[in-house]
Structure formats: structure tokens, C-alpha cells
Image 1 (cartoon, rainbow, N blue to C red):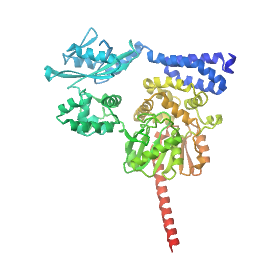
Image 2: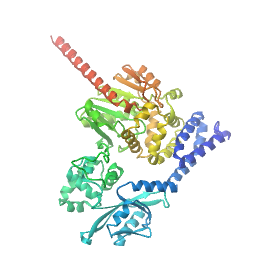
Image 3: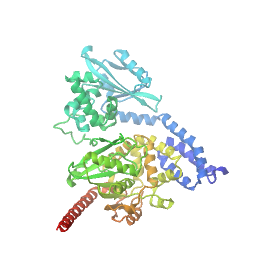
Image 4: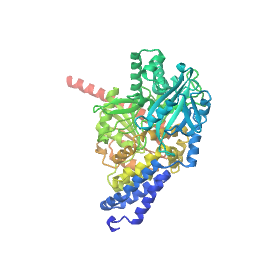
Length: 593
């Protein structure tokens, strides 16, 4: 195999075997990534092209296998156990109504209704055509969500609402339908929950509840005894607050949120739920429309009148990244603004996304919020985005606080500052860019089903300080949800982030005069603290704080101290500004005299 110029047949065979192993065992992904980074850097450009041609068909086949794989008996047992823990009556059926699996709550609901029943493991309705026609319509693939209503006053029977959602299932059939059945004894979504989750008014939440039960706008207005015009006004506000444009998008948004898992729980008492059932809700997503028409999604947390801080996360994550403790933000008087970067989460993609275009997005976003000056905080690869803002917007960015900062990569020697999966991913993107999307395609296809296993794998290489961080279930759950939100648009999100991270930044650190505070854990397993040391040496106004007991996640373990640093830098900037104002005033007086 001389044409590969250095890539042996044995190496290719091992990589091919790993590709298929990863398709069936997601835990092999890290090994595959490491092998690819090792081989990519050892190849000449010519041999790399040959390897790309040989391996691409195997990646494509592996991705098909993931989508077509049949759930094992153990997998079905796990699915059944999961469904049984949910309070709603659920069933997964095929397009003929045959029940593939259902949970324990369904028979209880069926005992209360004659309009829905199971016979020989097939679901039937009275009238029979109600479910049959809905399933046939969904089978065409033209409709993904359908409501079905059974009973009601006109039929002289209790009202039963069915919500049908088309699924792609790795089961006996490739496609199936999720059926959720609810009645008056098991309201699907509480008004209080909708209010809390999406900042809706009571009237807006009541309308949203009716829509989620399958009503059209006209039916919902009739049920609530409000005019169509009033209903349209409420509906418009619901869409704005939730960041959607259509009723189907709103329904999908709610079903993707933790809110529906809380349905069927005891009602709120005096606005509070018992500690045993309390579930923290995500901060409300907000949107700003930029000059080119793209929407930027973000969360606005903490003290609305506090010190504004824009937080930029690492490669894996979303607007949900950052410590979930709201009280500490209020105590420190911090207004924390965390965005979804272009193409991630709910933010629209940018066709030419870069560090410099990002700085302009932030400028427009802050102008929309009426914020003239603000601080930046960057985490790992998010440091580059924070520094880009400092470089491009020197009169508006007051200071930058960086944790575990990843340095710019100008050549092979800079990879010595990186370790583990981060190093391997960056090397694959830099030296084998054609195959990088295929490698990460396996990750994104598996991530949703194994996000907690992903954290278990991560914990195995983390130092004690980081392991302690993830003992807090709030942080672990928040980080897991953040990763899932960041991956919701597929592997191109990872690709764009990695390509930006391993490419030239477009600016020089020596040109940034903004005060910079680098914090780095000496036990960081992914980015060496020497990286921050090197960057500080290049910046004219920077300092370094090394934390002996911290790893990469000092963004969580030292969160209060980091906020104190922002407060200190803000006070220093205000004092400096006041002193300059006095000097300028005295100078003006002297000149005038």
C-alpha cells in the first residue's frame, strides 16, 4: 500500500474496526478520537487524502448502523423502567396501533375511559376511525404531531386527550408513534408550571395549556370564554416569550423541556412544591435580532441592575453553561448574560462565523440591551471569544476574567499545552479536516443517549477538586442539559467550534490593553496552566492566579471568588475613570485660565 506514503494497511484496518466498534459501543469514541489524532499528524497531505477516501464509506455505514440498530432485550427493559417512572400515561405504537411498549400509568387511565382500550396488544378507540386515521396521516410523514380528542360533553363521556408524536425508533420498526393520554384527573401541564417556566401571565398560561391539550386557537378561546382577538394577542406574547413562531414549535419546545416530566405531580401549595418534588427550571431564553436578520439566543440572570458580565463557554455547551446558583449572583450584584453562539442551541448560524464576527454580534446584543460597558468571562476555548471582544471593543469591555484558558494554536508545538480528548479533537480538525465531521458525527448521534455516561467517563480522568464539583447534582444536571442543548443542531456545531479553535484567531494578544485576569487550576487535565502563563507574558495588562487545588472546572469550584474578581476589577475601573475625569477637568480649567 505504497500509495498511502506512511499509512500502513494495519493502521487503516485498526481504524476501520474502531469505527464499527464505536457504532455499537459509544464508549469507544474516545479511543477512536485518539487514534485518529495520532494517525492524522503522522500523515503527509497525500497520504491523508488517500486515508480519507478509504475511511469515509466506513463512517457513513457506521452512522447508518447507529440509526438502524435494533434495541437489545436489555435496552427494552431499560426503556420500560424509564417509562414507568413517568407520571403520564404513555405508549409507543406502530402505524397500525400495535403497542410496542407502554408504562404502568396507561392501564390506570384506561380503566377510567371506554373511548380508549387495548385488545390483543393493539390500541383501539371509540369511534375506531379516530386513532386509525390519525396514525395513517402520520405514516405519510407529512405530519409529525397530531392531537386526538375522545369523549367530551357531546359524546356523554369524560374528555380524553391523546397527543401523538412521530418518532424514529431503533426498534422492531424504524418508525413509531409516541402516544400520551391525559384526562381531567391528570392535567398535562399546570398553569403554574407554564408561568414559571416561560414567564407567562396567568391568561397566557391558560391559553398555552389549552393548545397543549390539542385545541385550535378558536377552540381554546371558546373554552376560556375570551374573544379571538384577545386569544391572538395572548398567543403572540406566548410565541415571543418562548422564541417560537408556530404552535407546533411551541409544543415541541415544551416537550423538550423538564416541564412535562413534572406534570401529574401534586399541585403547588402557596406557590411552592415540597422539597421532595422540587425541580429547578431553566432560565428563560431570550432573543435579539441582529442586523443581518439572525436571532441570537441568551439568558439574562442575576441582578438586573448589577454589574453586566458576558460569559463565553467552552466548545461543548450552550447558554445554560455557568453555575446554576442564582443567589450568589444576587449577593454579588452581578447580571450574568450567557449566549448561545451562532449555530448552537437556539441561535441562528452565521455563514462565516469567526472570533471577529462574534465580537460584532456581542456589540449589537449589548446595544440592544442598552449596556454601554461590560465585563467578559471566558471558559477554556471560550477565552478566545472573550479576548476577541476585548480586542475589537476596547472602550466597551471593562475587563476579562479567564478560567482554564486555551491558547492560540500557531503550529504543532502549541499542542503541548493540550491533553486528552480536547487535544485529539483539535489535532484531527487541523490535520485531517475532511474526516473530522465523520468522527464527530458518531459522537453527536450517541451523545443524547449517553450524556451521563459521558460525564462518568470524564470524571474518571478529573482531579479530586473537579470530582467534588460534580458531586453537586445541580451542577451535574445543569452541565448535562447544557451539553445536550449545544448539540441539538448536530455535529456541525462542534466542527465550527473546533475549526475556529485550531485556526488563527485574527488578532494579537499583545494588542489588548484591557485588564485581563487569568485563573488556572494546576491540576487541569485538559489545558496546561503553562498555557495561561505563556499568554499572560504576551499581554501588556494581565495577571495570573494559579489555583493549587483546582482542575479545569474551577469555573464551578471557585465561582464566588471569580465573581469577587469581577467586582474588584469593576471598582478599579470606576476609580480609574473617576480619577481621569478629575484630571481632565483640571486640565481643562488650566487651559481655560
